[in-house]
Image (cartoon, rainbow, N blue to C red; front, side):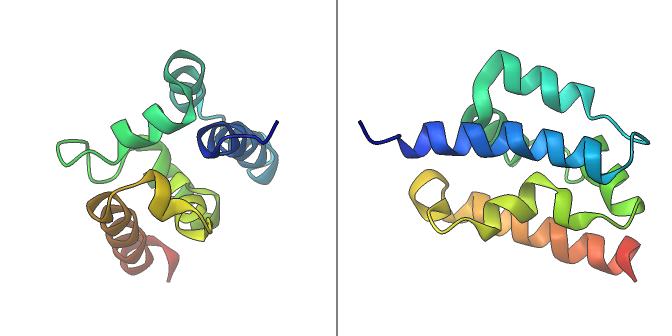
Length: 109
């Protein structure tokens, strides 16, 4: 049976958690992100973090950008997916894009 896009995304979010831990050499472990994944699953976690009333920069997003690792953010991962438009609204994708552009101006230079 083919894996659903939601399951594929959930797997990608859990894999992202591992990439963050490895990519930051143990200097940052996104425990709140991990707890959200375990409680709500990958897709619901992403929807919650991309809501209009969510913090523009979550703690984890900001921390990764300060460490010059915007490529390890959930937002970057979502924008790289070939199926993102099937799981996220245009507004959610725009939010992800706006955060990355703003972070580039603030942190990545």
